[in-house]
Amino acid sequence: MRAWRVCAAGALGALPLLFLAGPAGATIDGPCQAGGEIDGDLYNADEKEVEIPDTGTVNWFGSIDIPPPPEEGRPIEGWIKVDLPAPLPDQQIGDWENDDSTNIENSDSYDYELPGVLADAMKGYDIRVYGEHYEDGTLTCSGEINVKIDGGGIGNPVTLLSIAFTVIAVMNLFLAIRVKA
Image (cartoon, rainbow, N blue to C red):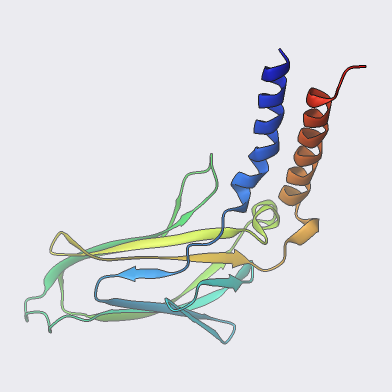
């Protein structure tokens, strides 16, 4: 019984560490370039992670370094998603598809706003934004970047909950291993 309590307390104590994983940084695999500008700040794949406001407009751009496509074009498609924490499904924020595209670059703007509760819960935490681009049905480029929402810290409800669970787990650990007199 005592060994079970020690294992349970140790597992509860380690649970908050799952939320502290470090960022992997930005990557783009393939002959593509991409980036964006928010409030005058330029972000690209050279960034390890970026910190953005919870509401704004991103002026994005993307290009692919390939020979000029034929006059009749070629089929392309792709998407960009935000990796939300479980149990929420990933949210697709952009996609494209064209059966006869002759473009090798594109740009536009995208307005975003995180809902209040979600924005508060995600402030200060890394959020993975990732995407893929296909040429003629073949994966040509893929990329991802870690985005952090401005703010966070001790006032973040998720941080407070994590600290509370850690305190409870440490108390359980001490209770489980205390010497009975």
